Length: 87
Image 1 (cartoon, rainbow, N blue to C red):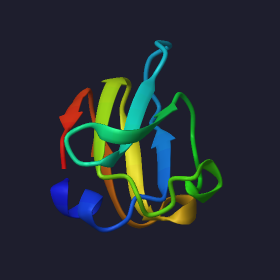
Image 2 (cartoon, rainbow, N blue to C red):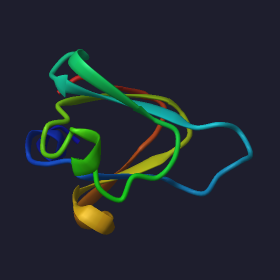
Image 3 (cartoon, rainbow, N blue to C red):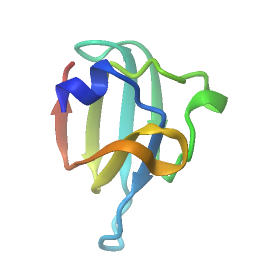
Image 4 (cartoon, one colour):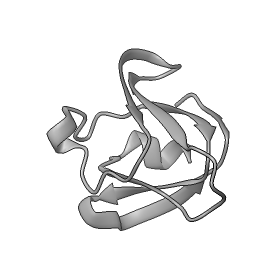
């Protein structure tokens, strides 16, 4: 996951799961610092949310998320589950 964060994160989407709410927070800086963006639903592109190419760390509070290096869930993708991804 670290290599993906160091490159580009431009799409994030909630993967099918239970009825529970899902939440993920992206941070512009490593180790959960800098400007933050909390997502609770799909984002085909983060550029409109002032986060294009700038997510350096992530906290997944609930749900399973697919994060990708290109808009519309293209490029290199990985699935993140609940946890902290510092850099």
